[in-house]
Amino acid sequence: MKKIFAGFLLLMFALMYSQEKKPMFWQDIQNFKTLNQQSAPPNNTILLIGSSSFTKWKDVSEYFPGKTIINRGFGGSRLTDLNYYSEDLLKPYQPKQIIIYCGENDFADDAKLKADIIVDRFKTFYKKVREKFPNIEVDFISIKYSPSREKLWPQMKEANKKIAKFMRKEKNAEFIDITEIMNDVNGNVRKDLFVEDMLHMTPEGYRLWTKVMNPYMK
Image: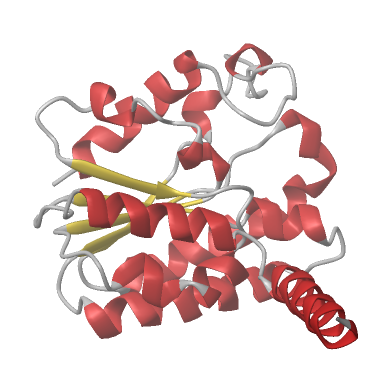
């Protein structure tokens, strides 16, 4: 009886330990795997990869009629997470275009983070993308100015500038700048484009993104 009880305790500890060791966003990635098992992802799609600005754009296909879009935005992911899960985010798909929105949460995690670190993180992921898809279109949407993260904007703005410079030198790559369209006539970000948390966007915010993104969509 004591042996059975001891074995039960060991099993419980093992389960608890395995749960604790699961990395952040592990479940999101498992959910993607389940979706892919339920319905094999079609080829020649537009693949969205990134953080919650994509995650919450659940009706993105309605904004781009005639386009086949796979949305793989997850949680409050950072570029470090895109790099960590790169195999899961890239291997199951054969897209004709990849659009990335990420980096905002990297700064939110560490307010002292230098723009160059974010740029390097992005370049690392971009390299992983190119290793698998050397010739497809790969685009990066500029990190947006979120009112709740106003203090972080100087670093974000600098990161945008450096990523834009990098993307201009790459073949089949574009930097999609959504900054200006989200501003009012005085050059200030429109707070009405955000929900209560002043971080995530309203449908009108996504409508404006669509207006800028459309010319780049394959």
